[in-house]
Length: 119
Image 1 (cartoon, rainbow, N blue to C red):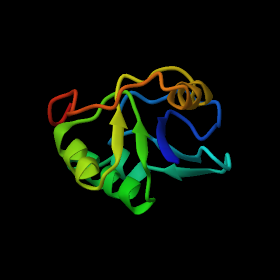
Image 2: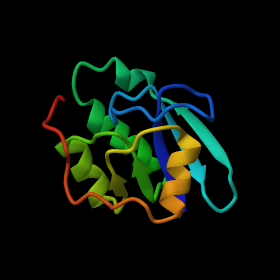
Image 3: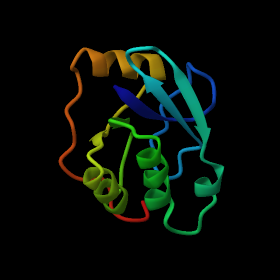
Image 4: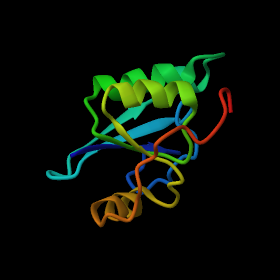
């Protein structure tokens, strides 16, 4: 399974970033192989608008299965949902802990966005 985690830094033990669209980094982790790709999201961090949609497209292009993040707005959620990407919001702590919780079935997938547009 290919999992994207929003991150505050490029460090593999980074804290999960609570923002999706404006998260500075995405850690893309293959849970079977352990392979990790780190994507810098600096263009969207600085975007005047559309950061969630643009960040969603990055995740879709990377063929992710699941997104782990703190919060996800409605436009981003719609793009991800249409692409078949499952979203988990309310994720906190360090990336390795978040991945373990996902593997252990400790998260529920979201049925909708959890914040308003332009949060």
